[in-house]
Length: 206
Image 1 (cartoon, one colour):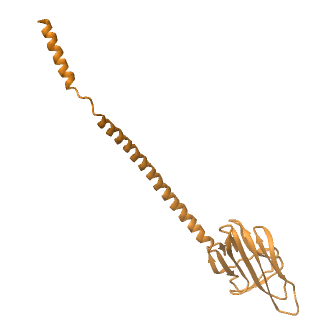
Image 2 (image 1 turned 135 degrees about the vertical axis):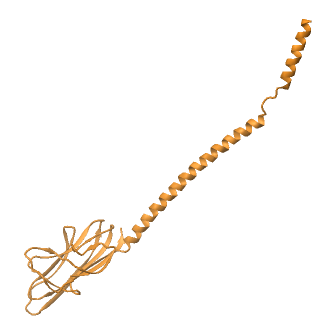
């Protein structure tokens, strides 16, 4: 009887073991591949976001550089004294104010101070001309910052009643350098809307 019970238990256990089915290897492999694909997609999404951010930054930088590039090739000014009559003589040197602005592309010339300020580093050309009477000496200096660069002058003459003169120069300027015309003490020029001018322009960016 006991033997029969043992045989019956063994038979039932065998059926239970025989009915057990382990997980399918193919299903496990598919899940592993799915995880790999998921990680790849997440990695691609991250890289795509980085590329989008980089593209936006490059566009921003490119726009700034383009605006700067355009500006460097549009720097030019020309101005006249802007009032009639004798300017000077004074007891000290004076920066001349050319208040009638004819051209001021880039807005780098300040008519209230008579000073041109370089917006970018580069090679610039400047010229200045004057009209003056012959009964008083005329003498103008062109300065770069506080350094005398070139000048023009005319001495008193009893044989003529009017004088004209001028000068020009090519300068290498850094951004922020200032250029202006100064009239020497005890000299004069004649001002008008058409005489005595100061001009300059950018030749090339350096």
